[in-house]
Image (tube, rainbow, N blue to C red; front, top):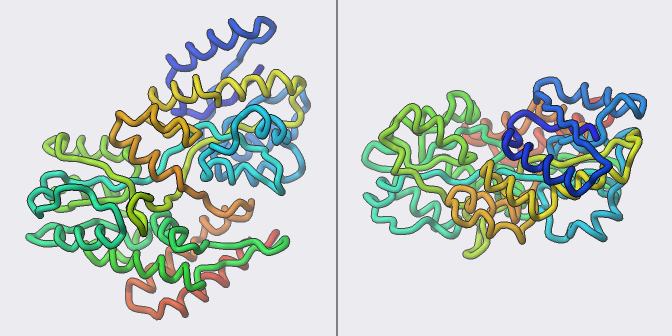
Length: 388
């Protein structure tokens, strides 16, 4: 069995242990795990899906939002029956499962996830008299306003951080785009999506994040490390860069889920991660399915999550990472996570992103409804097959 895994998804020790265990339980199978680079992976996977059965991989790890582009042309194996019968699909994280679904057929099988959380300065919270992380959006705004004083930014939120905005829109019941029959339409101008943008505007104003740049320009880890920022919204892995630049912050950093509208339910967040797909041109479907079943099953999925500080693929496995503050915060948010619209044309939106331009316009004082209508029209054009 030839298995393609992406660079950085699993440690060599994990792969060694998994391979030994799998081959002990499957005397007739041997695993050939080949590590791939993310750069340029799209065309390489497309070529593999079109290759003869003896030339390509039998199992491929793909980004959860990439599944849609590989489904086209009927080149993936439909794994719906296994998902419904054996794999407990009802407990999968929605941000991993939904992108793997096409016309009620499951092609992508969730493996692991990561999502944004709030990284905060414990010392600045204590100084402001905040004894526990906020549990609702309203509390978050109030706490951030307290923190935005004494020369400190209550939060550093770049004006074009559209992944974070997406979560606020979803929390309000809105979407970036919706599909009607076979046509996708941008929906930033709906009342729900506008409410999400309004919350973003109010939160972003409690810091000095640039209105015309995203979280990588400049890298928000460097800004946070400067010592005058109380919070950022980011994946926990950013902490490594923060501490490298400012070791004094090592013991002052904490994590909590992005708050939701009501207590007890964290906010909806964009969920990134990986799914497994099985090419239709595999010459041993049953063996490929056995590999996917083992890697995504509770035993090895939990092992991977603990080893790599990921969120397991099921909400029922979240207790396995409860002891790690950062991962537990990710898991709480990922339980309600979402992914970008499941269409191959979404790549065109991200390549020339009208959401970013829309956000900047609103933060600079433009009428939100007018700017949202303009951005929605552009998204609709980009999502038209062959035109994006």
